[in-house]
Length: 122
Image (cartoon, rainbow, N blue to C red; front, side, top):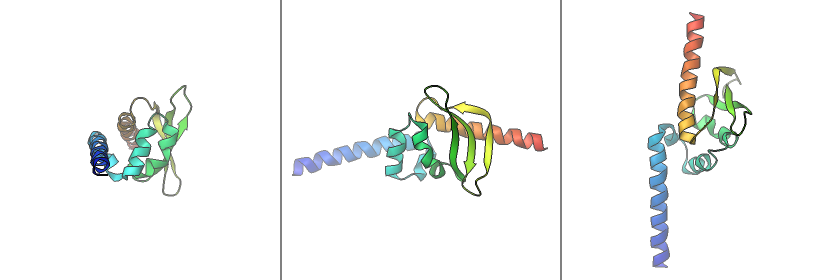
């Protein structure tokens, strides 16, 4: 039994180290539970499946409206968690690569869209 416990602790430590590395590469993952983060990472190649976690990653964003575009979809609209407002991204963004990479790119697309809207309103 002691051997199994030791091996289990080694596995748990390896998993924690892996998750900490992912959190360091995309700090918004610190706001997601361990189970939620495992679900996000295991389904990273299927953005449709991680859409349910958007509210944990981005404040006031409930989900993304995705558009089919070959193997991987494009994010085209942010749907808010408050009042179900929609905000179209200026340039729909294809969700490519690792989940932490395309979520970081999505932050840039959100900023760019908000900057464009601010410029237009001024």
